Length: 79
Image (cartoon, rainbow, N blue to C red):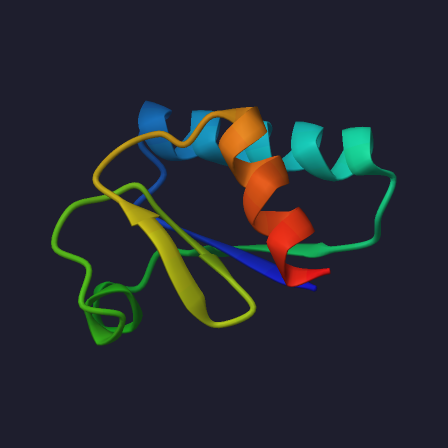
């Protein structure tokens, strides 16, 4: 599983990364977390506001910090 955090490294992006890491740890799964900071790659997803979160190429949220539980739910949907 690949989880991408789209954003320029702002505090909201860091919190999103932290929530994703906690979700992975809680579920006990292996997943790669990738930080995407290049503007062209972010806009390629159609994202105009960060942070944004992408799981296996599917945009899940943009413009807000997803909670750990939201991320857990999205991961479980993929399983």
